[in-house]
Image (cartoon, rainbow, N blue to C red; front, side):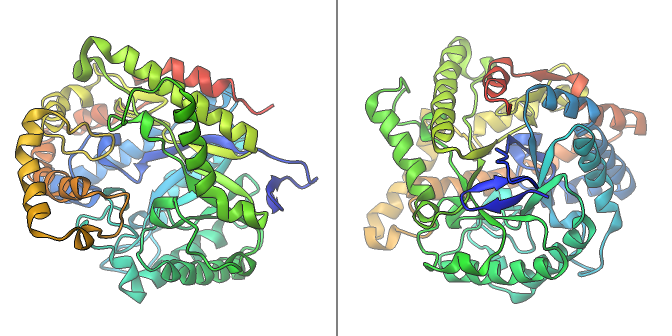
Length: 473
C-alpha cells in the first residue's frame, strides 16, 4: 500500500511515489459542461425517464458507463506515463434517497471494472466522492440543483449517510494495493469550517475502523482552496492523510484579467496563489496533493479563427503551473480526462451520433451561456440581460451586505449568473435535451452511448504532449 511519510507519499519500501494523472469526471458523476447536458445530473436523469421510460433510460446510462472508460482508454493513459487516475463518483450509484442505507451492488460493477483495468496496467486510483446527499457545496458539480443551499451541512443524516457509504467502500477495497486512497469529499464549501473539520474527524474514524491501509486525501474548504480556518492541530487526529488543493489559474479561463504572456507579475500571481493554498500544510510539514487544475480550451466554432492563439496562451499557463509543482515536488491530477470538447485530454468527435444529436442544443447552450464552467459572459447581448439585475442589487443593497459566502469565489456578478443563467435558464432546457432521445430504438441508444468510446474520441495532442513530458520515471 502507498502511505504518507512526512511531506511525501511513499511505497512499501519507503521510496517516494509522485502521483501524477487526471480526473475522470462526467462518468460516474456527470457534469453539464463535461457530458453535454443542461442543468444538473439529477434533472436530466428524471427527464430522460419521463421522455423514453425508465427501462430505456437505464439501458442508455448503463451503456454510457460501459463505453466511457474501456481498456483502450487505460492503455492510452498509461502510454503517456501517467500513474494515477482520480475517479469522481456520485453517491446515488450506491444508495437511493428513497431507500437509504441499502447498498446498491450495481454501483460497483463499472467501478470494479475500471479499478481492475488500472491495476492491470499499474495505475493507481484515487476514489473521489464528488456528490453526497444534500450537496456539499452550492455548485452544480455537487449535483446541487438549489445553488443557494448546501443541505449536507444542515442535516446530520445526510452527513451520516455519506459516512456509512464510505464504510461500505472502504470494507470492499481495504486490501486493494492499486487504490492509492480515498478522497472523502470533493470541494466542500461551508461558511463555518468547523463543521467540515468535525465531519472529517467522523469519516476518518469510520474508515479507519475498517481500513487502516489507504491514504485519505482531505480537500480544503471553499472548493478545496482554503485550509486557513482549520484548527492548528486538526491534522493530528487524522492518520495516513494527505491534503488536497485545487489550483485553477484565472489566466486559463475566458475571465482572465489579461492575456497571458508569462510576465513577471503573472508568474508571481500563479506562484502566490499556489503557495497560499498549501501554506497550512507547508507550515506543519504535511503532504500536499493538487487534486484538480488546468485551463479550458477555445473552439473554432465558438471563438472563430483566433482559437489556436487562445489555446497556446492557456497551454503556456499550464506549463508554468507544472513547473511550479515540479519545483515544490507536489503531485497532481489534471481536470479532465474526457469530455465533449472543452477541457478533456480526449473528447467526443463531432461526427458521432451523440454530438450530431446534440448539435443544435449545444449551440443554444453556448449562445445562452447556461453552463457556468469557463463561461464567457462578456458578450454584449448577455450583459444587456443580466447587468441590470446586478445594478439593481448594487443600488439597493449596501456593500457590506453583498459579501455573501462563498466570496470572493462568487462575486455579485457570478452569483447572479449562478441563479439566473446556470440554474433558472438551464432548467428550461433540460426536457429539451431528454426529448432528443424520444423514439430511439435500443440499437440507436447504444450507438449514441458508444459515441464516448475511445475510438470515437479525438486526442488533444498539445495537452497530452505536455503531460507526457511530465511522465513518471
